[in-house]
Image (cartoon, rainbow, N blue to C red; front, side, top):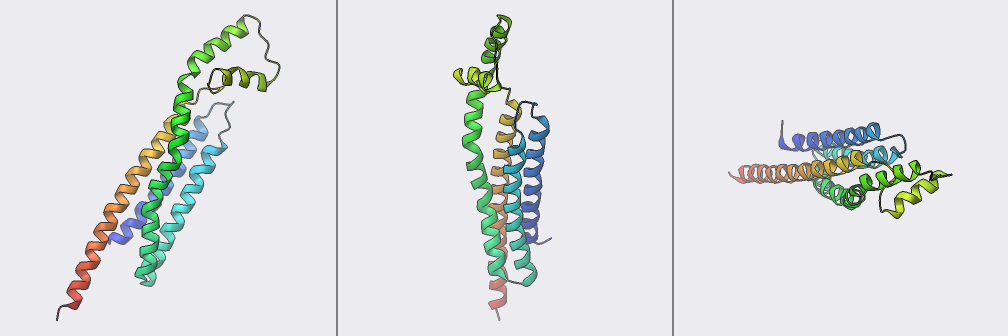
Length: 179
């Protein structure tokens, strides 16, 4: 397998793992969560990554080094961009989720003492006042940090393979120019 085809393979595997991470969060979400975004966001990232892989693969098939190079460079940048996009919610969810155990104890105590929460909004307000989510978001925190790590590894791998591909192309050009 040539290095360029390996680059396409890494892009596709990365896209599949993004979807798998989103699916894991979707199925791990408690009933009170809204798990759709756990599928939508990684799924969208995977679709963009697959587009970069398709452009790269099309460039390889057509013998268009320019097309392959554009797809490859976009594919190298995307994982780092995804990691940066996942970072703010991961940090915010991590911080808020630290407050959840204490807020849950206070909520359970309030209910035991006879407090009535007439609507779901009342319950959410109770937790929000304590700077906590209204349900345990450990599943989401783990998923977000996992996606950040996965994205960083994919990005570094793609950059390393891109450098290897560049060296191979330079060697091929040098051997062609020799009489």
